[in-house]
Every structure is written in structure tokens, then in C-alpha cells.
Image (tube, rainbow, N blue to C red; front, side, top):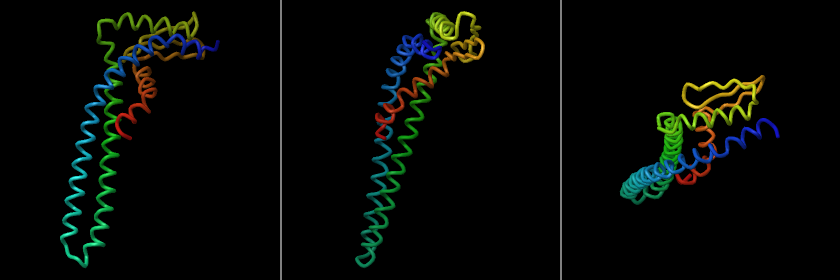
Length: 173
């Protein structure tokens, strides 16, 4: 089995636990973000409706071309606001997931998690690997040309990447 496959297999329980915690937190955050997106979309629709109503009142001769142009602009603006809100919500959720995973180092069970990560990293890098603690939490193992990064920021990035499509779907993208 290759060192990368060994690393992945060794990290599966840790990854699953971190992913479960991150998913639970993400679900709460996604609910808040979805509410914010819906409020922004409603506000954009309200602005679009008001702009269309104003355009219709400008006169029979000019109403059709002005209303059509304004409606198209308002639709584009509403789509832009909704897309921007979705991107912002996605970025915020990803940031909160990353912060939650890195925040694990402040929890009571962190020493046990760090030890499990160190054992997994050493197994993946080899018995002669030098394991050092990462400043942001977790560990990094090095042996020869092999580097096994089990730092909390790296694991958080992998969790966000794994949830990526799900985050986008929950935000309405």
C-alpha cells in the first residue's frame, strides 16, 4: 500500500469525526445563511418591483421600452445580489468550519486528538518519521521526502473541500 493510501486510511476515523462535527456546525450555520440569502433576495425583488412600477407610470409612449429596459436591469441586479449573497454565505460557512476545526485545539479532548493524529502521521510517513506539532494545531510528520500534513488547518481545508458541493447546494447556488 502506498504511503498516501496508508495516510488516507489512517486518517479516515479522524476525518470522519471532524467531518461529522463540522457538518453539524455547518448545518446550523447554513440555516442562518439561508435566511440571510432569502432576506437579500426579497429585498432585491422589492427594489425591482418598485423600479418596474415607476417605469410604467412614466407614460404610455415611453412605458414599454423603459419598463422592458428597467425590468431587465432589475432582474440582472437581483441575480447579481442573489449570487453575491450565495458566495458570501458560502465563504462565511467555509470560514466558520475552518475556525471550528482549528478551534478543536482549545477543547478538552485535543491532547488525545493530537496523539491520534501523530500516530496516524507516523504510520503514514514511516517509523523513522519526525513528528512535530503544527503552530495552529495538529501535527506534521517528515521522513525523507515524505511529508504527512495532519495539521488542523489542512484537515479543515479537506473537510471544506469535501463539503463544498453540499455547501453550495444548501446556499441555493
